Image (cartoon, rainbow, N blue to C red; front, side):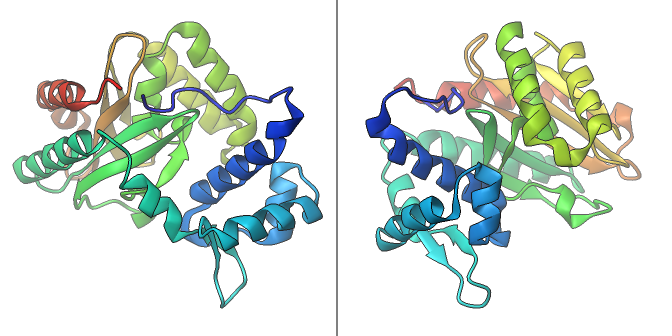
Length: 264
């Protein structure tokens, strides 16, 4: 199964080092190409510098972390990729996702379309296509990028398709995780999730990203979404009404993605 649960503290002291190592890897994944300095990562994770340095050294030795020579910042290492491509029974969904986004991008020019899958309180982009005229290049999620669920409309679609208690728990945890985005953004994200509950899709007309219209459809079993398919476009290329009219196309593609998702 895909990882649907957030990391939880364990009472078993024997697993503490493993849990901390996984936590560091998750934070490095969220940081992407910017990487983390040692002290910044330790402070962000609430751990002392010596502990983080010891764990990172082990992860460096195993290839799970690498250190950039130019600034000594830590990044995910190549072993993560090697392990990822070896995961059983996931290639079908990735192939279906890439086909879906390419077809949508060909059918609707000047859009960006992407597929993300849930990983705890985050989501990971597994396919992306198109070239929307975004006001900012940073607005478009990149293939392989890991982001918090509530930071993107594609993630909000997943949260909106969850049981209410689970969705609320993610919103509560997100207040700390996404504090840097500001209270206004978090309030808008929460409003979108609540307004879209059980609809199977979410829509933003410049609410999440200024001058960007976006539509996302969750896919997977009822109450247990695996991921979502999203399209975004600059408002001057596609009006809110024009983008929302793509909903039947997204629902059809999302159905195919759900059928391609592994059961085990």
